[in-house]
Length: 431
Length: 91
Image 1 (spheres, rainbow over the protein chains, first blue to last red):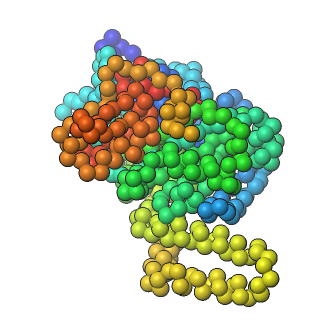
Image 2: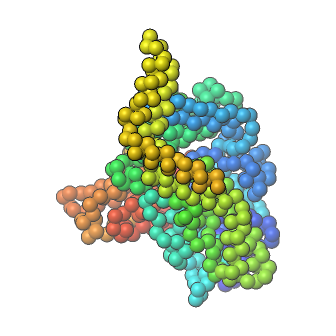
Image 3: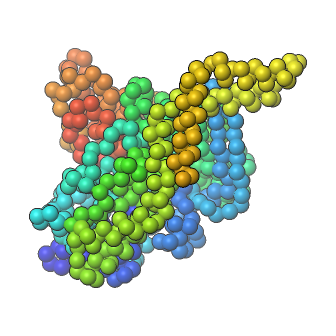
């Protein structure tokens, strides 16, 4: 850095997006300062639990052998909870699509790799505001000093007060974020292996529908770590507000479900945590670039909630912004027009294509949540209850009663609305 | 398990000043008082006696939900200083 505190690029936030961006720049020989508000990278970060192999390899080709990963996920469980019963679909394949990780360890490792590549990491530093010269962002103001750069990249997470402060985004609405609470529960390795039917380094992902989250836009999750199990849930903030719910009470209910409780029984709580998940989708992606500035990762709303993807979108958006910054530095042109190459690259990538595919998902989900997150989930469980009952009632009667119930416990017009919503959703996804 | 026991698992280095500043006038007129139940750390409690929010900012998990849920959009919400606040070891 020169005497006047000026560098090529400043990246704000050392999460997956910021680190991927900074390391991309450093590897190209650019001078990058990465500013992190926590005492170390990862110390303020929380997520469900898995990082994805292919996109992570694009940034860290050898992470599978070098990074502190927990377990390689070989099984994906989809659990639909009723009041006391549940139906589970399990997909199992001994493959390496994803790994469970603990962010305090994994993000810290990524940041160390970035430092090895030449990134200057500044920890325990909050960026208070952006410094502008006319319409161009030229630096950041921290608690202690001002730093200047040709380009400032905002990877400051879901709240992104910085993007908002310069008008790149509006204030977030309660329907556009989910509040997630989670617990990491200590259990010994063999107990986890036995309960989840896996080997020492193998893990399981559980996606949990219904139960304590019946009828609201909320999903539970479960991940296995080396010697702990993560259980948590995310509920859209508007549902919490409207229903007067306390998030940790929903989590307590979830943990007590007879299909969940045995999996974590006897464990001790290692850590409780909470975080927001950006779920506004395609329509709520903010302005991504302006003179001297770009926005990446959660700060740019880049989350594909239906597929539990976020860190991968963060890393790849960071890489693409980094590549655009390299070109801009080579041309010595930091205008909005030059930096918007990043937006174009994002649109060509799976990131914006996937967000666009699901652009109507959240609107439809919000409108029909009682049906799709409540009624039909219960119906799946009652179907299997009927199918597995042995009660000397002729089977035909059971079927007839089940089919009749669909038409009697739900208004015909509501049924039509459900079918219409489903068709609209499928139409919007596939075409 | 109650929330205090959950929060006890976390490492905090609290500041001496709050980074969360509700607007007292707006709080009095607030109908939902959403912050008092949506907060995952139960930072906010309404005191009927004082007619203001009790803010246990030292328990804050820095998620930002209260700022977004604030009915009057008037909660002055900042991140704690660089050396302060929560540290997640298992995030």
